[in-house]
Length: 283
Image 1 (tube, helix red, strand yellow):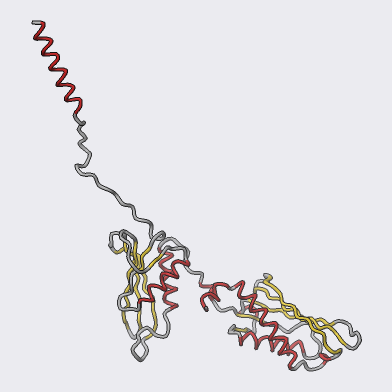
Image 2 (cartoon, rainbow, N blue to C red):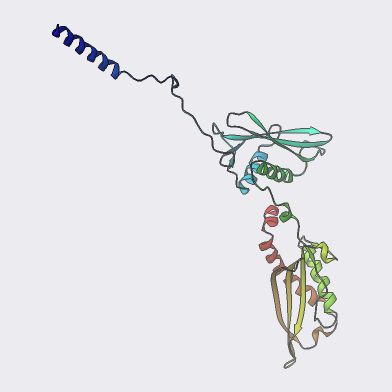
């Protein structure tokens, strides 16, 4: 009897041991393992597909503008499982338009889309007009805003406009002649000159000083001070030259033109520093 009990007990222990070695049931675990892939965000990796019905360089230019706005955009070979931008050129009422749409990594289009006018249709084989840089820049700005950015600061891209008042302290007719000569030089550089200070973005103040005559000569100093319309100081250009005493007491003539030409070159350097965004788009 004891023998049978021990036999049954050993068998039961063996059975429990076998059961204990079996894997536990996990009713909520999937039968097959899956690998989840997390796509980079659209600002971290954004593929710009070729433009449908448009030139390939349009997508390349958009990619460059998006990169300037801090978006890691790229063209060429598409990388799987990335956000992307598709586009299409359409014609409507005598003009061409480009529509950009952001797609999820799965390829499904989102509701993030923007349409920009490229230009009016012109005669000839091209339907894109003279340039589409403005449309590309506007498109990049809109896409950046959709993706949480601030967009393009278009105010910084406006052409600088300058107001040049009458020059102070100049003998002879220099006060008016020198101011007019500087205005002409600024216009020749491609900038706007306004007759009212409130219309301009910059004010260029000119001032002339002469040293006391010594041994028949004088030193003339022309100071050009560039300020923003609100009075904020930007920089200055100083010109100095030795002349025969009394030379500038009458008409300045060619002297005003030469002085303005040299001063304008210095003003251009200042503007290139403070208006970097404007000059970048012009290059």
